Length: 505
View 1 (cartoon, rainbow, N blue to C red):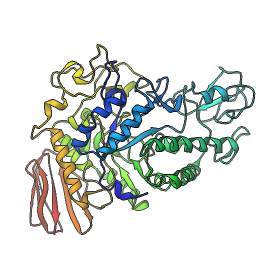
View 2 (view 1 turned 45 degrees about the vertical axis):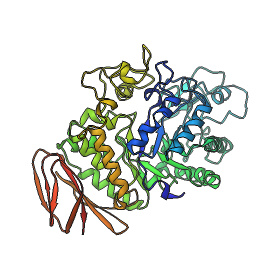
View 3 (view 1 turned 30 degrees about the vertical axis):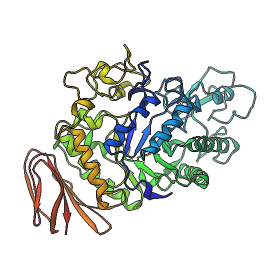
View 4 (view 1 turned 90 degrees about the vertical axis):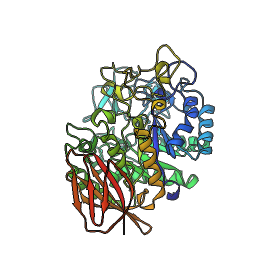
């Protein structure tokens, strides 16, 4: 894979049903995304990740796929998606689709065939026990509905039967090995699905639950091997195929061949210490020590890998639920000055709030408030849709932020994000592959980035007290500063809620 094409990348995540409704039916769609590509490009983003947009009964917002090769009619057609690829590429924007390889909807034709008593080519496409009375130990299951005698392993919700990639440690007779015909057929089918969309113009995939495929897999060794085989096959034909994993353990995901791995709200990363906890660091109420320690461990194991830190996603509280006011700008200063590829969840760049008290929609439950429609202006439904009823209700607060209302406002959050993206792109030390050296992580967060002979010190003070810190390096001109922060000689001066990016001589 040619890393140069993403060395300067910033990605933008789009939840398609909530981004922009182009046809007035109350649900966002692919043509709506196409219409808003200029906004994404103007923000400075060079890639988008679109949550699942395939045929589905939508019990889990599209993560219950019923046809991997067909766009869901509520979003448009395959031709609309191909047009989106073309229009994005005209603007220098890469497009990642969301691949769900671990499970399907129970309505998928493969599962209907697998549920039949007579043996067929899909019998072993899913992980079934040998008796309906035998539930799989350690896993959920779906059973008692089909003529087939057995219980089918599920991955998450009970309507999502798990595809069969085999078991690393086989404890019962019904458990197949990773190289048995069923698991091999499943692997080959996923490769063909990837090949199908790459051939249509897709640039790659964000992969759902990437570390969960092989079952009974201590250390995920067999899952790593599985992805190495998938990546090896697909990159013979599409060497630039990008993949980003929902794994949260970069030392495993990057070894498996993924281009990027997310640090997430689950797993060992301590991501939540910074953004989403009772006392988040970026509100000046905690520290970043545990995060930095874990981040350093991951970097040491996979020094050249791309570890991605998102502002949020569809499975988390909105960033603005826990971080408020000017402190949001500090969070973005961190996100946009770290190694790896930054990901911005739609609406976080304008400070969209987590909408409280919503009934669950399509499996959202507590996550539903982070999935509400994008707020474009102050017109009907905040400019999201002309419909009388929308997919989810919009934030109706009088002070709810919107794109049009913040456009061109010098001190607004989106303008700050634009400027930070421009600074990131202008300086090699701040891009994806630059090195990082941590200097402080208690109170003030301070780290040094370097690449191509350039060195930049980043210092962030989210607290309520001013800080003046003597460093071991000779400081030059401020590359960018906020909140009155600055540097003289070897000293960094940080008023409350401020940050500075300063060159190092």
